[in-house]
Amino acid sequence: MKAVFRIMALCGIALLTFQSCRAISSLLHDDEVVAEVGRHKLYRSEVSRLIPDGIPAEDSLRLALQYVNSWASDLVFLDIAEKHLTKEELDVSSELEEYRRSLLKFRYEQRYINERLDTLVSDEQIDGYYQKHIDHFVLELPIVRARFLRISADSPNLELIRKKMSSESLADLVAADSLSRFSAIKYTDFDGRWIDMATLSMEFGKDYSDLLLSMKNGFIEQEDSYGKLNLAYIADFMPAGETAPEEYCHERIRNIIISVRKQELVAALERDLLKDARDNGRFKIF
Image 1 (spheres, helix red, strand yellow):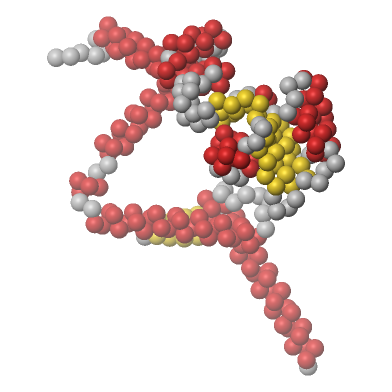
Image 2 (spheres, rainbow, N blue to C red):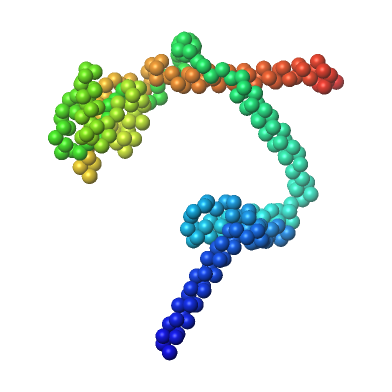
């Protein structure tokens, strides 16, 4: 008898599991109504489109229910708003028309710009802009040329890499990079670029002002609780308040020049369209 009850219990569990799986599948794939809020209906096919393929059934159901609840929440608010707002407050036609005009204008501007924008900016143009607007390029943060190393504090190659990475000899710098490939967790010279101290401080997980206070003979060192040493050599340094070197501003100036070109294209487009409308009699001022 106990065996019979055990078999019946197992069958019951299997049936419930099967029904649960069918419920999940039904919720995600059958094109039937899964939820209603007043006159609004949500169909299974709408929910199914939002569920990624290949995820576990439990995750599918969870995502589906999240979407259903979000959908219902929006419509509950909508129904309440429609019941309590005045006729004037319910009229959003002018806002919708304004949004439509803005959206279509933006889309056409983007197409117009993409078809005509010259994105080539020469070094001469960048230098000219820099010289003309040099007062705009004052450093807000200190900047450095740095070489950064993360390595085990007990590495036998630590002192040799430290010596090589602080050298100005190209051969020594190449050797530091080569040694680090086999000995270090990370080594970078940031492609030789100027970087701000906030960027370097992210490697240490400390405020940049604390790093500068701890700098000794051009080196900043910090050992973590896992026996790893973070080490930076500062090859060049410029404090905040000084004029940034042109090469540090290169990409920023390039983006500014391209942005100005975009603005000029849009302004010219607006002028041409208005002129054309006047010439064709479509635009009149009374």
